[in-house]
Length: 161
Image 1 (cartoon, rainbow, N blue to C red):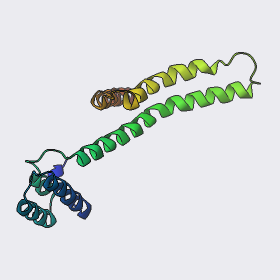
Image 2: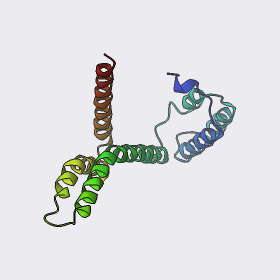
Image 3: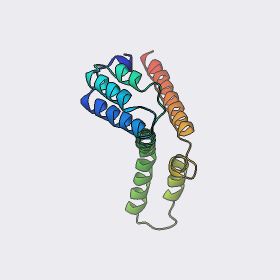
Image 4: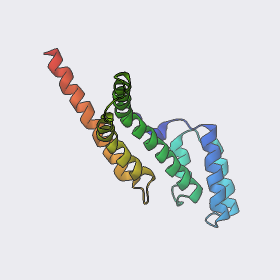
């Protein structure tokens, strides 16, 4: 896998860095001379590594921190939806079968819904609930994905024998 710092920088990345440097100047972390020098070097930078070097001695600005947090939440929300899609599909099929059979008697698909969507609901609460722990949720989803990939590899090896 290629080192991300060696990838070429986009104009939008240069603009975002210039805005971040502006915030640091307004907060008093950079003088106007330092700001102008760094912005000039940012617009001349070719790679992401060069852009990162311009802000390596500065803390994350509140705007950058909130943007990064929003990006992580969006990614985790998408992963949760992908993980829950199997449970949603199974639940929908069971409800359709119950409706097709006349919808009489107890609503038995509730058990399928509870069993398949309870983990998704728990993960969703970890994402949006009080005191969300994004790192723990991200690690849990990564571990689950790794287990699934290992299971698929074992299954594929058994089929090729």
